[in-house]
Length: 123
Ligand SMILES: [Ca+2]
Ligand SMILES: [Ca+2]
Image (cartoon, rainbow, N blue to C red; front, side, top):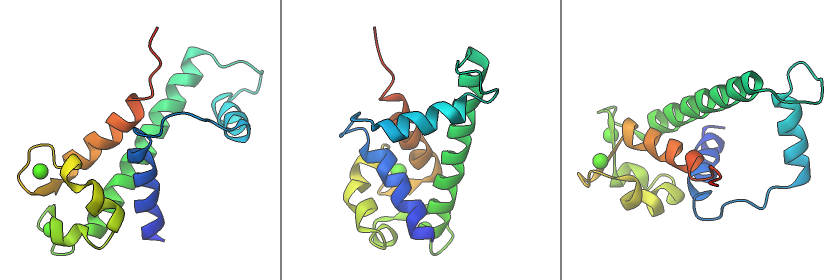
């Protein structure tokens, strides 16, 4: 169960590398999730609250993944702790942005936001 949360997080992180290719089913379900008054249009308020909710949910998923990895509860994830999830271990150096050899919750949260905003379309 918790492993699924971690893998979901990693899906987000690795989305940086393998951007787009969105599938129609995902598009449809995302659209109806955003279109809260079901009028077939998404206004700015609906879009905004959807994205806020998305960030909040993912932030919570990162929290849960972090607590799961931080076995000794010292508030940071060491490389040894990260080996519990090979996928995290693989991304460890990239996630450790201040290069102190540990992942802080902030570093993991930042990676989540970076993964999300990396897909922001530019004109
Ligand atoms: Ca720790
Ligand atoms: Ca660090």
